Amino acid sequence: MATTKYYAWRITSNVLKSKGMPRVSRPVRKLARRNDPGVLIMTSLASGAKHGYALARDIETFAGVTLGPGTLYGAITTLEEHGLIEPTGHDERRRPYQLTAAGRAELTTAIRGLGAIAAEGARRLGISLHALSPRWAQ
Image 1 (cartoon, rainbow, N blue to C red):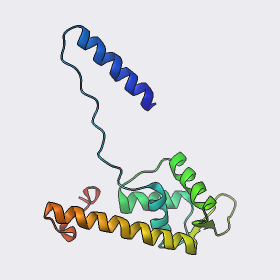
Image 2 (spheres, rainbow, N blue to C red):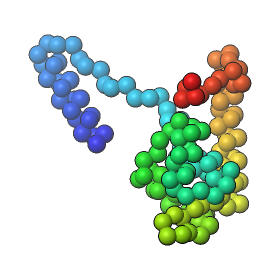
Image 3 (cartoon, rainbow, N blue to C red):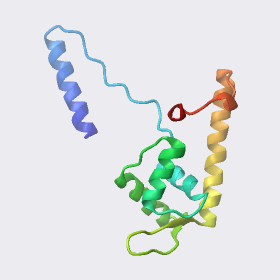
C-alpha cells in the first residue's frame, strides 16, 4: 500500500512538473512511532495477564495507540516465539498471556533505554519531563 501511495505521488508530481506547475511535496509522515508494539504489549502485561482484546484496550488507554489485529497478534506471536511472553491457559475463546522472567528483563531494559532518550531530549529542549502530559490525555 505504501508503494502504491508513493507511485501515485510520483506520477502526480511528474505530471504537474511537466505542465509547468509547482511540484507537489511528499505527504508528511509522523517523525517517529510512539512505541514498538512489543514494548506496548509487554508494558500492558506488566500489570497482569491479559488476552488480546484486553491488551488492545489497555494499550489504547495508557498509550493512545490503536493496534490493529494483524499488528497485535503478529507481535504477540513474535514475543511468544522469543520467550518473552507465554500463555497462561485459555478458555473457549480467549488466550491470556503473561510476561516471562526474560520478558520482564527485556521490558526493563527497553524502558530504561526509552527513559534515557526522553530525559536527554527533555534536557536539550530545556523542558521538564514531569510537566509533560500525553496529547491523548488532554
